[in-house]
Image 1 (cartoon, rainbow, N blue to C red):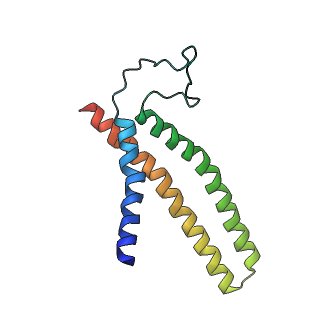
Image 2: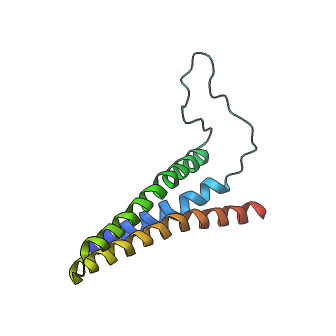
Length: 125
């Protein structure tokens, strides 16, 4: 049962990090604006016309929030190194914190770069 839950978690992670960004960037949008504010109708404050634009907007928001969080996590890791004062257990904790921060940054920025690369390739074909 635990194996199934881990597998489903991995599939969802891949879906959100790779598949959804590719679909959002590869959508064929002609640039025609949709009616966002028609008289007497409820309009979308995010100002998107399609699902692919919505996903792209959400991903851009995640990037804009994620980059400062990564910077703060790196600063926190540096603080852990300074606070360790030679204690090998605390230095190991600081190294792990820095390692996981850099892995998270690579995943965040790498997924964005891969999505852009795949979408540009699909649109060029």
